[in-house]
Length: 101
Image 1: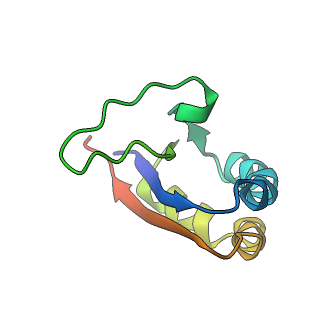
Image 2 (image 1 turned 120 degrees about the vertical axis):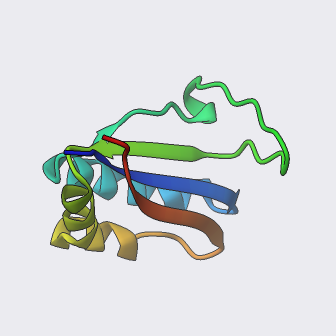
């Protein structure tokens, strides 16, 4: 079975401290849903080489055992509570994608 992934790119974060509140709720929700973060954020020592659009901001990649598990984790009550904690004034490009088996 192919894995599922959450891919989040944050082109603009005007309130990094506000995003910390989201992170504190989202981390446990993702783990409870079977997710595993597999990328390092540039702010945590990860490296980025940006091409084309040149966007090197925060990128998060989370792996799940299946696409269905990734969708269920997003729809979970715990993650929905985390979404409410997202601060105003930031941009996020979020998608759930199917892995290649």
